[in-house]
Image 1 (cartoon, one colour):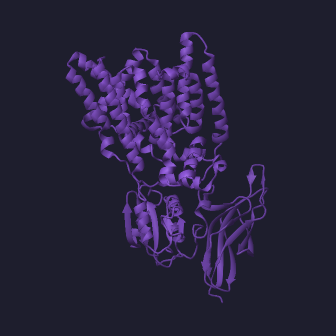
Image 2: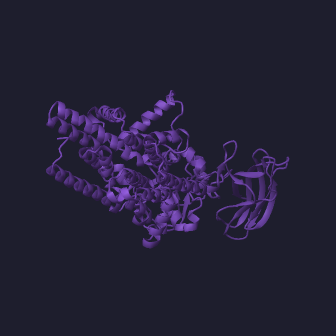
Image 3: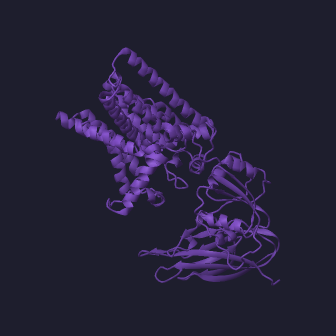
Length: 622
C-alpha cells in the first residue's frame, strides 16, 4: 500500500489533498471570522497603528512593541482602508496563512518523494491548533510560518516555471521576507547553506546563487541597522523572556529543567498539541529517532537542512539571548517538527506493512494521526481570552464611574476608541503594586469604583485582589474568560501621612532607583502631576525626595502649584522630606509641577532627582 503507483491511487491522493486543503481553509476562516476581540498584546499593537502614520511606525513603538517593517506597513494599510477593527488589523497575517497553506504538501512531497508522507504531514499541519490560532492574530508569528513555507518551496519546488526563474524568485522573495518576518533570516541562512553545499558537491560556484545571497545580505544589513540594532526594547524583552533562553551549560540542572519544560510546551501543551495519553509520548520519541536516523544514514542532507538545522539555530540564538525559544516565537518551526513526524510515521508504517501485513501498517498510520490531531480538533476553536463581556459589565454603570485598570488598560483604551465602552474616567494600575500602594492610589475615592483586571496575570497585583476580598471591600464581582471587574467600596481607613507617587502622578513615569525603591525621576527639567481635585482651604504638602550629585552638588528643585511657585528644596543623597504650605480660595483642581533647575552630567556622574512620595494634607489652620 505504501508503494502504490497507479492512476486510481493518484486520484485518491488528489481527492485527499483537496479535502485536507478545504478542511484547513475552513478552520482558518472560522477562527478568523468568529468575532474574537483583541486581547492585551494585540491592543498594544493596535493603539500604535491608531496613533501613528507610516513614517512614525519606522521608529520604536509604544508599550515595548516591535515588528518587521513590511508587517507594520501592511497592517496600517488594511486599517486605513477597512478601519481599525479586529479583522482588518489581523488581515495581513491571515492572508499569508491562507495563501501559503497548500505549499506544505508540495514541500514534503518534493523532499521525501512520498505522497503518503506528504498527505499525512499536510493533514496534521492543516488542523494544528497553534497555526490556526496565530493565522488570525495581530502578530507576525503566522507570517513567520508563511515565510518558511514560501522560501523552502522556492528552493525545492519542482514546478517548471519555478525551475526556470528560481534565482529571481529566491532573490525577490528572500528580500521581501526579511522585511515581513522576524525569523526569515534563520531559514534564509539554511537556504544559503543548501546553495553552498550544492556548489561544493558540483565543485562549481554559481554566480546566480552568489547574487541571490548578496541581495539577501544587503537587505538584512540595512534592515538590521535601521530597525533592530540598539532598539530600546531589546533589554526589556530580554528580561521579560528570561525564562525562554536556553542555559549554555548543558550539564547544569537549569539546562535539564529548560529542556523538559520546552519539550512539554512544544509538543504537548502549547504548540503541536500532541496527545500524551496511552504513553504516546514515548512513541513520539521513537518516531523522531527513526526519522532523523533514516535521514543521517541515507545522507538526505537537504531534509536535515530544512528541518533540524532551523531548530538547532534557534536554540543557539536562545542560548546567546538573541531570540527566545518559546511556543509562539518558534511557531515557524511547526513545519519542521511535522515533517519529521510524518516521515517517521511513514517509515515505521511501511516497515510494518512489509514485515507483517498491509492492515497493520495502515492501522499504525491512522492511529498516529489520531494522536497527532485529537487535541487540536478537540480544543478548536481556540478562544483563550475575551474582553467584551467584561466591558459590557462596565457599561452597566454610569459613565462617570471611576475605573482602575491593571494589565487590560490598553485593551480598554482600544475599545474606548472604538466607542464600544463609554466610561472615559479610567486610570492605569501598575502591574507590580502592593496593597499599601494601591490604597494610597485610590485614597481620594469617596464612592464605589470599578477595578478591571486580568485573571491570567494576577501574580503582579494578586495580593491587592486578595486583600480587597479579605477586607470585604468587593461589593460585586464579574468574571469571564480571562477578565474580571469588581465593584469596590472605598476603604474607611485613609493613610494621610505619606501618599505614594501613585496617587498624583502617572504610573508610567515610575522607575526603580538604585536601591530598588519606586520613584519618579527628574532626569533633566520637570515632572507634572495629573489633575488633583481639592476643596478650598489651607494645605500642607510634603515631598520625599533624594538626588544624585555632580561635583558634590545635589539637585535643586522648585515646587509649583498651578504654575505658581510655592517653594524650593534640595534633594540630598538619602530620601528626605520637604514641607510646604499653600491656600486655595475655592474648590478647584490643581496641577503639581516639580522642576529641577541645575541639571548636569560630568565624568560619569548625572545629577537627577527621585521623588518617592507626595502627601497633601488639609490644614486645620484657617
